[in-house]
Image 1 (cartoon, rainbow, N blue to C red):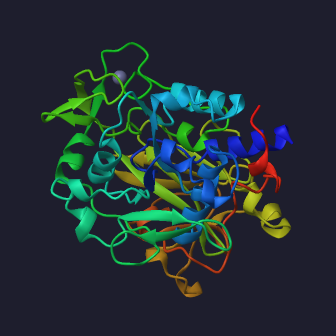
Image 2: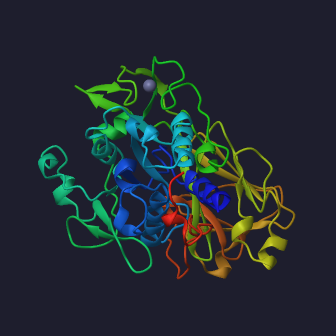
Length: 383
Ligand SMILES: [Zn+2]
């Protein structure tokens, strides 16, 4: 039983990150783990984060939807969590997968503001609408998880809908994210020179620093490390990056970040570091066609270049057109610049393109992070 819970926590670990290009919503972990009415279980449970992430996946009709979690430092020693859960959160903190703060204050809303992310929270932020006008102006920017028939559902604070809605990055957010930043504190997990990435955190590991750095906090207009309260130094322009997405059977399965330093190989089971493995989403026929390493993406002076490294070849769908007559073959070893809305097709129905150009939402059920959770997991006594 405990082993199965560990697997769930590992699956959840792949869905927490502070990478501005990948995170899809921001939440306060201390709040989410205490949504006792979601399952009627223990006062606090880390598995509720998985339930909320699954609900986001369902609403956004997309697999592997990572969340940006703000963690109050007191949570690392919260006696209502199991010792295993505390250990897991500490690991996330050490690896910079979550943002740990002594006093989170309004940081959750600041991150949402800078990155244009929706907020998952039941809290009413009535006093903060002056500073963050989108709280009242943009329907769906804040959604509250509530118990639902098939797991948690969302209710928007404004607008009455149930789908979390992204906004635009604030102008200040755009400026902050154009630069990379350094924290003077040695070993800072958020603004240090490198970063760990948990054993299973491949989402985060694809690209940690510096392109994946979180947004600095602003204190009196000065970029500051939210963890250490120290003034950050400007370490030059942030490397260019491009967010690509993998769509299989009409549903986005995951996104990944391409930077100029790190080409990314996509295939059935690529061995290259940072490679994106598709095997778990493929049926037998597709599995036979798609090579272990099938296509390689590179970012060169802002252009996305795709190279076929497979046995069977691929195809390009210019402008995302699904008309067979327009499909251009991409033979093994051939390269091509991927235009704005172009998609590479590894096999019919298996496509990669720029995330913002790829519609999602086929009638497929997203993969649950809770798949391994035993029914009784929520009710386990704490150890
Ligand atoms: Zn720091």
